[in-house]
Image 1 (cartoon, rainbow, N blue to C red):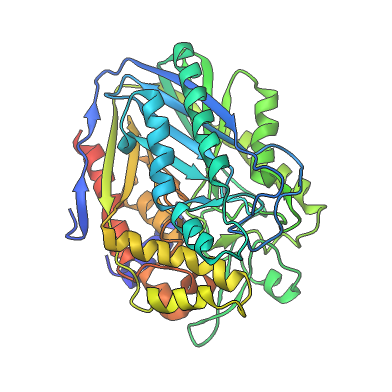
Image 2 (tube, rainbow, N blue to C red):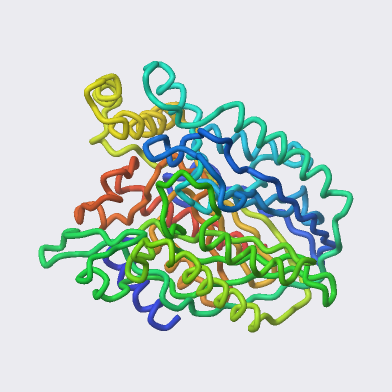
Length: 466
């Protein structure tokens, strides 16, 4: 779908509401009527003191405000086990993402293609890429991007958590869906000028009164909830909202920040239910319209998210699960030709450069090498009755989420982005000539737009055919 057509399509829907690039589409596994059970799990992923944050170019961890966790569930009874997990980290990229999925798959007795691992994207947290860490190690003078031993300990903790959870699985008979508008949190980050180019960025926080006075712009204003029940007993509730989840960061204090704190507050009120928060396609969405970055705003934003979670749950309507299936799609978008690995490696080796100009490009080289090796990104989706839970990569723009929802108005669709973070930002095709920060750190060529869009449509089409 061409960008201009898609943009009009998305905006209209938001107001009212197999591709040649793909490598392989996975067949849906279905059980009708399904005999399902659910095993929630969680494990601590708070980084150790001194661990690098957001790739090593902001202050490392020196204290803890609250825990960072990996939370998820194993769904049994719809073919081989399905694992869905969210992690309070900035990102998990490339082979690290494969390893994380493989570890959880091994513990659950399934395959990595049937595991979704998504990050919430807090910035006072690890940004994990094994390839980038090796590039940094070769330099000898750069701060660590990640602690590999800590990463491996987290994988071991994930295995133990799932193995402990499986014997405690509860039957799942019903699901429920609901949504509510989130008030005064998200706004589009990209301020487009009269020339059609980005003239300013309204990020996670802003003190500029001019930028804060501008409209919210294109966002998805709704927090969506999908809950799982054993009869009338709510076992788990998954909450989805598209926005960068930082109130403030760079102070070296680990936190799940306002989205994680809101989730935790709700769970404390309902200890028998596992609440899980997923960040949607928030690559071009932030809280800067409403957030000045002061410490006083964290509890304010937390309350707004909590209120939306509660309001969304008030709209939940249970229905018996009659169909359940899982679909996968592999994609491999091309690298943007402006990125040259040899030139970037010379920059990384230039000791006169600032740390951020040497660490960050290691992620670019990691993607280039991965693309050359032909290692695909795996998209997947869980489909229950007329509900679809989609799991997408990296910092996808909100247009992908709105497009998915508008393309299947008969379905309740949630999008969890920040899966495999290898590509970094995934703008829309029309965003590239507009410029801006997000485009400047997007490793894929503009063709990523139709490739990802077609991959999402394939997931949805397979769910309809099952």
